[in-house]
Structure formats: C-alpha cells, structure tokens
Image (cartoon, rainbow, N blue to C red; front, side, top):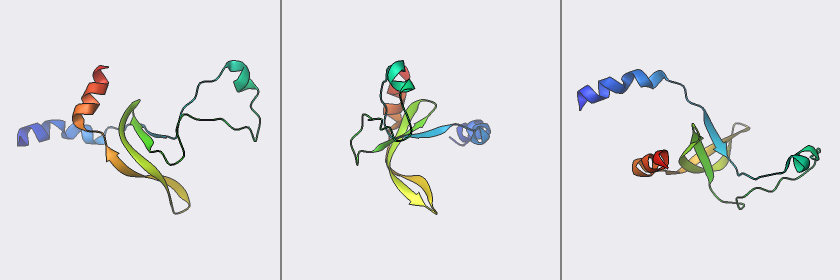
Length: 91
C-alpha cells in the first residue's frame, strides 16, 4: 500500500478546475440575445437545494452557499462516493 501511495504522489501538484453549479437552464439563442440588465433567468434547482461541486465536468460533492470574509464559498454537505464517481465516468 505504501508503494501505491508513492506512485500517485506526483499527482498532488496537478491543478484542476473546480466549479460550483447553482443550477442550469436551456435557452433559445433569440431569448439569450434579449437578456438585459435586470432580466431573470430561471434555473432548474429549487431554493435551498444543494449546489453541485464539479471537477472536470463531474459532480464530486454537494454543498450549501456560505459567505466567508465577504466572499462566497461552499460548505460541503455530501461527498459523492467513489463507486458513484466511477459509475458516472462510465456513463
């Protein structure tokens, strides 16, 4: 097991893009072009529903929005199990 840990240590410095997804929607190009300041875009999630934490387009966790030193952050409430993550990679 120690040998296995040493074999992946080189990955520790690899940077990944992490995004927190509030929600998604689909829009026609015409509707997109009609957006103006003050427009409201309705998303597919309900208020209070967990946010998705995404790495390389894969959900790895869920959480809730928080404010830390006047910046938005996310408190993790659920980590997607390794088995579920592998299943999502396949399909």
